[in-house]
Image 1 (cartoon, rainbow, N blue to C red):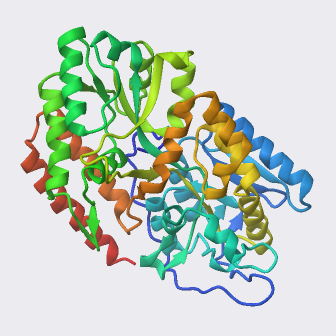
Image 2: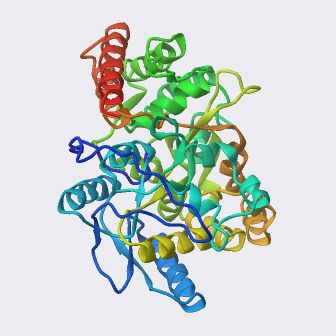
Image 3: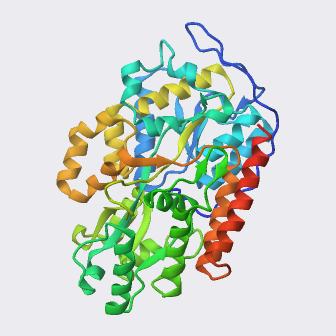
Length: 440
């Protein structure tokens, strides 16, 4: 699930040129030009998708950075949804005019790399002036940092963590109380049992399904499975079958229904006491909070597990890429990224927006601890960070996402049975990975 993502029916990015250039050495990071020009020369433009409180805070942080650090001003521009940004970057690559930086998911980055439009960040990360010390790098959650290193692209870092979240279970306390349920489920068996009880006691649907590849990946992880091994998908695994079988049961027994693609109707239904459960990114907290307007009405719980002693969930959220325009733009963009991930700034960002920190030391910050004291459920997503797993950053995963969502829709609408849907999914997904691997 990609936060406030909308449906992702994206066109495949046209490959312009194969990458293969290396970073220079020296006291300053020399980044070779790829013939791309900046959209503007008097500012460092950052294409982002944040809205409401998150957008206001990001702009405020950019303003603070601009006042405290001399150089080109960083200018935040909302460029639409993540899908919109992907399309705009694709068009801008073809036009050879780019912003200084933009948010991007790993699967998008893998589409940008062969064009030469994004720069590897390894040298900047270790730059004498703007880089991190080894102790600072060790403060980053390794599973967060590692998702930005692309084995298929020489093992280099082509993006850097920005706004991270995990998949969690939101629940409506009123609906659970109506059904005589005291606490949310810890296992998937309990989840199904509670859904049945809610239907029986209240007549309501228990769960509203948002079709989403990241949610499927997170559920497979929570069943104890994986989604890839090397460059082969594992959608024919027992764990994948268990996930799709659960979705089939929920819809067949009318315990759950699919919301409109691209909508957030599940948030509205949860807020209106129409459903008991919603499975979404932890960064949805602000939107649910606004709808509920009372912390006693709802709660946040870890994603149900097959075995709670060995938990897993999915880690997602956008990263930042820096484009191959001018060295001045690149170094200034990186300086802002480095500022943004400082513990003090991260603490402010997380407590206001509902996103999670990318560094462990942020958990000791007074602002974070105060938020846990104010509402105990605020701590739940943080506790999930240690066992959250990133999604594959393989060439072609952008296309695989569409195949997963198609298979999920086929199962919950009854177009295909689980075995057939997963057989067809694995065949299509493996073919996509093989085809894209040949292009890199």
